Image (cartoon, rainbow, N blue to C red; front, side, top):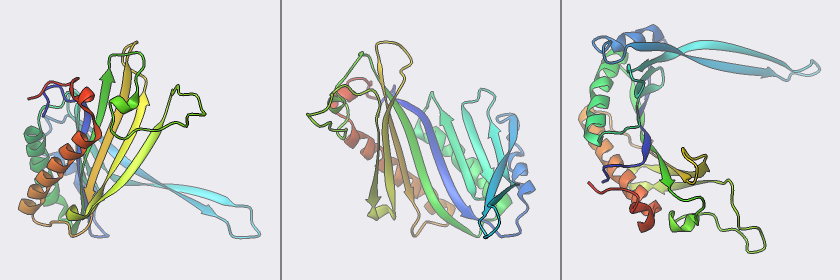
Length: 244
């Protein structure tokens, strides 16, 4: 696509169902053999808050924590993967190299996770790409850069300092949906405008179960993600990037 794609974080995520009595401590051993590449290990805790409203007593709250999994981080902090009770994910922070390298690393780590956790079922597959589009201008018309943008009433001030939109579009052929978030954030430099285009594409119906089918399906998700990205931007935005 582009040699300078605006991807700030890419995520591959697989949600699973483990047996109820699964020992979460096993999830730390998934890193065996990858300690050099991922030297940092941190536990992931899940907090559960309970509110009791039984009259006539005063409402009471309590919370508890349980071990949910582990987060492993590369030495430079750019690649992070999680081994959790509800699944596996791999994140790549900028600079994003290419989809093949990212996919191959995810597949290799997923194989280790699956071997150790023996999930009863794969329940959801997802890719998420968070893009930050930096426009070298102090102010812009969003419609010149995004094909879907907020329209402000002519009776209101046309100066926009912040906004957030979310679209959820069914992807029937993939058995899921795409969630598109758009907002503007403080730019890395003055005299710029930074637009976030966050694309979260998932399937949670008739999810493939074999590894071969899973990674073939991820190819479909990746291609659809590219189509969604291109459908969201204008030629003026494309001019900011260098084609491969």
